[in-house]
Each structure stands twice: as structure tokens, then as C-alpha cells.
Length: 84
Image (cartoon, rainbow, N blue to C red; front, side):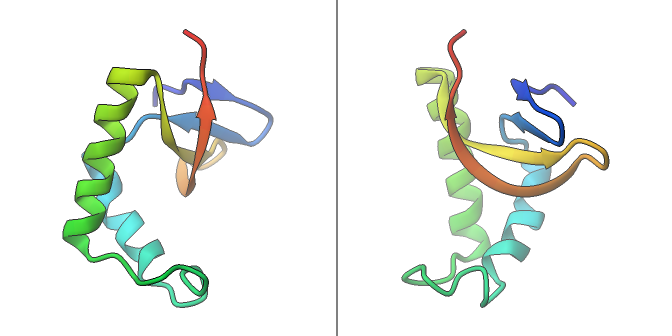
């Protein structure tokens, strides 16, 4: 996995198409989405991931995918500016 930044436990990286299904599961969790206006569909999630990939290519920042380094399991997404 190619990480843009790491610390002791999380690794920040750009998105991959393989992230769509795990993020769909996150977006379908009512507890996770409790304070969001609505739950995203699979299509909306795929569009979000494509926007983030494009935004990173254009601006060098986006909402990054965050993995637990010990398992490479997607935890959440988060914004972080990386100076390249």
C-alpha cells in the first residue's frame, strides 16, 4: 500500500476503486451517519471517491482514506494537507 503519511497506527493514502464497498458499509451504518443529513448510496459513494481522487491529483489534498497500518483495514476518511 502506498501511504502519503503515517504515524504509529494510521496511514493516510489516496483512494482506490476497491474502497467503494467498505465505504458503502460505513455510509450504511445508522450510528455512523447519525448526524449526517442522509445516507449515501453506492453510486454517491463511488462519485465521492472519484471526486477525492481527482481533487488530490489537482490540489494535492482531499479527504484521504485512513487505514489501520497493522491490518491495512480502512477505518475512515479524513482531510489532511500534504506538502509535496
